[in-house]
Amino acid sequence: MIELLDLSKSYPSPDGETVALEHIDLTVPDGAIFGVIGLSGAGKSTLVRCINMLERPTGGKVVIDGEDVTALSKKQLLKLRRNIGMVFQNFNLLEQRTVEANVRFPLELDKTPKEQAEARVTELLDLVGLSDKAKAYPSQLSGGQKQRVAIARALATRPKYVLCDEATSALDPTTTDAILQLIKDINRRLGVTVVVITHEMRVVESICTHVAVIDNSRIAEVGLVSEVFSFPQSDIAKQLIIPNLIRSLDGGEGVKLRLVFNGEQSDEPIISALAMECRIPVNILYADTKNIDGRAFGHMVLTVPDDKAAQAKQFLDKKHVSYREEV
Amino acid sequence: MSTLFTQLWSSGGFWLGIAETLYMTAASAVLAYVIGLPLGVVLVVTDRDGLAPVTWLNKTLGILVNIFRSIPFIILMVALIPVSRALIGTSIGNGAMILMLVVASAPYVARMVESSLKEVDKGVIEAARSMGANTFEIIWKVYLPEARPSLVVGAVISTVTILGYSAMSGTIAGGGLGAIAVTKARPSNAQDVIWLCVALMVVIVQVIQELGMFVARKVDKRLRLNKKSKRLHENSDTDPTAV
Image (cartoon, rainbow over all chains, first blue to last red; front, side, top):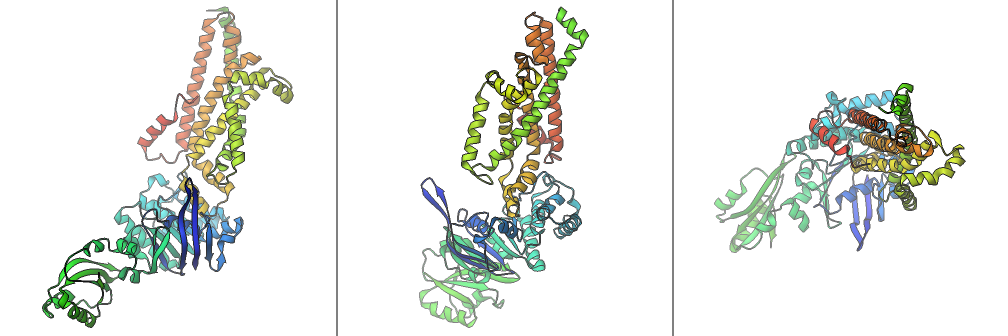
């Protein structure tokens, strides 16, 4: 379990101080794929680097498996880092080493006996599906392949945690999906806890169990993906999750109801039932539904005339559809 | 043809000159790297955003390097006469010349090494840190191997520079092609000897340059499949104004 307790980080800058993180409290439970999402400059990259002390926090604590890592000696810290793999946006492979030598690199640092290291490398390349590229150099690989090598490298020392810093941001959509599936697969099969830093909603949607929305150096919202996605509370979360929703709520007549599909509804057509059975003239202002983990999630904004609002709400309650009245 | 030319030609004087030039250049280059390489590494590591920032050390070394680099070689030679006498017992000949060349070029080499290492992608360094590599391991396993092609190119440029300086060895009774041209041919106005010495120097520079670039390409694993970037690389690295 990774716990960030009242974590702060600021940098000295010409005009005093630049604050990157402020009073961050987060708990990453074991086995989770924990997404940290925010716009660029929100402080999420700094946050992930505070976990393995690539950046020293200026306040608060980082506790990993009960141990305060901000208090570790240099030597202990190097050891801790072998238990936390890291994957980067730009892959950061050693360009002068072959694929297998890249994967072997952390094992060399760990002084793993040669035969054992070789066996581990073979196993890892097999895991990420690059056994045939063992002798290739990074410059001969595509972006997706490079990231697979980086993932294999991050897993080499059998870490309990893997940190992904915008791991798919440099990849095209198809490759992104493949890499995300690989990360998910690793989480499930090896039980590795993953922290995913991203600015892309779809990354969180497709693999994360938990999400923290970070805005302006602070946590705006945190929780299970299914909850946060259904009822985003903060403006920033709403903006990230349902970007067009805010705009659709501006102006107009009648009562606006935001329906939330959280994967538990029957596939009964709600809108037509509202219109036909209840004879309420509904207007759809916004609709966006997605399939996450095999269940339907999404939002829909309806307007109903003021005098029919109560009736519509009653109907939705009866059908167990969650909704909020938006003002 | 001048008498000096025939004399040198028949006695193998030119061969001796080539050998002495190569000897002084090679020995000086090797020793300059023995000093300059670690110095360059220290400059990078102790830098403000280096692996182990030590500002005062970095600043001091930086200033020392700049001072030595700004002294004209001929003046440095004169200044080093007592130092040479104290260290190797003499201030003339090839040995003294090598000492002077090393003192003059080690700071230059340090800057070359520094700039090569600074080309290494910061992200790769960060990745190594994230894997628990210590400073020494990062230098040894990341900085130096990743900068290898650039280091080789730097070594070629440094060697050619040292070769140029070595031509001044005549002033302290050293040997080599430069000494033949300056101390022997010049007083007797043997133009043909001077021109042959120049031509031989040009050939030596060409050979060092071509060989060095061949090695640099050979050790660079980034270029395997990429003909276009190979060409780009060649053009950018053989900077004629670098000396």
